[in-house]
Length: 238
Image (cartoon, rainbow, N blue to C red; front, top):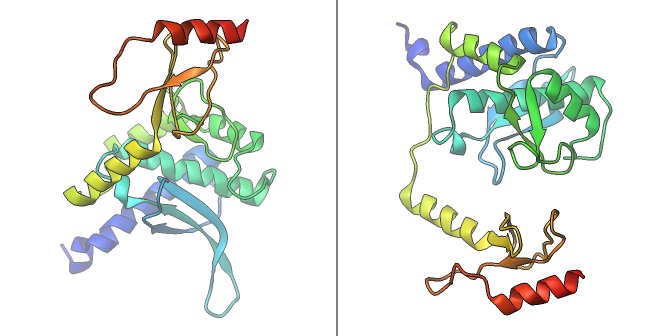
């Protein structure tokens, strides 16, 4: 085996490049142009797309960028990471031949293209989330085009994500504490439905049309609802 074949940089980008080429042929009929694939640690994202982000040094050509966040490689499956690659490839397709929208917004044209390749757009990453908006993730359609193609890519062609980031315990603890501070659990006092949002958010239950109660962090929190609070919520809804 040559030195280049053992090189982590060459190996990593070889797998990513071959995955891009494979998905382009299988899911996009080979219509997408080549792009520059990078890895960037960007907060609150698994990846992103930037159109015409790079120019050749002689200014004779430009290329798009698809970036994946290696910070999440260790806690996500290879299939999930490749689904982010395809998610960004859909953005690339829309940039060149779809209906454009304002920066960062996921419109109906993008959502339709996602469904066509077997990724279901969802603001929550789960069934039932909004398909359009500023922040929209996705989940993999069971038995869909992406799932079938990715299974071949991983199991037959043996492509993978060769290296994952080693977690820094202090950094991981800080990230977990920050996440806890930024999210508060809200519960509907009638049906018990739960939601998570920033502590200052005012949420209403979509089913019961009642104000949702924020849980206060700490060991003394009771899991039982206050009966007077329940009564006041019912009265306010009537």
